[in-house]
Image 1 (cartoon, rainbow, N blue to C red):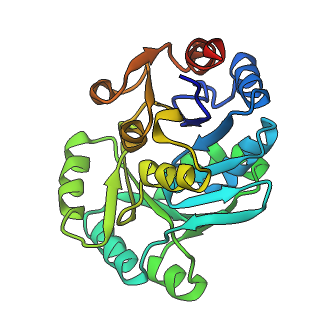
Image 2 (cartoon, helix red, strand yellow; image 1 turned 45 degrees about the vertical axis):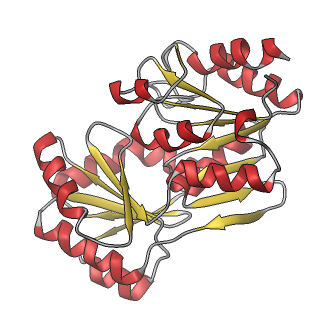
Length: 276
């Protein structure tokens, strides 16, 4: 099978544990691109971060960001698809989060809105600060979420809720299900992600390949977590990471090595480049 598009998750997949792209992974992507294959970063990350990596890798292609809420084409410098969250739904989510004392943040295209929460927010911000600044992402730390929503009026594409207690996360996820107009996923053991209803990497991937006139059978998807399952279901070849969660094994065709062992490069070379 000659594949025409590769959709690749970032965290836990293309990026190693140091949140960097290895030389082997970069070279494999560029080799595939040179063969005329579309390389699409498909991430839960904020748009600004997805664009930064696509440009710096020399891909300059389409990116799927915010778990599929946005599709942006770098060459054309235009948005192919957007699905932001309803303002009233956002307020309902915030009210539920505040009531359950769970830490959260949300974002638009280029700005993180972080809920202030004692030393936790400071530690979180300092850990990622250098990366965010380098990627051109702005930070807004707030105490009163309603002030931010009413005064800044951000166009929100995604919420992230974080807690180290699995039980608390599961309980909160059940409560979120009572809110209409949202989709729920996860990309890490300690988080819950919420987007507008119908948003997923799979939905965005389906939209993109239709625009590009590419058949689903000609698509490869590579990922490691729950939010990648929807694009596994779309792709003709679904590749899971060895470091991925157990649940993805039911949805992938093959497993490649971990993100710290250049699993993406090995998969592209074996299943795409060597098949041309």
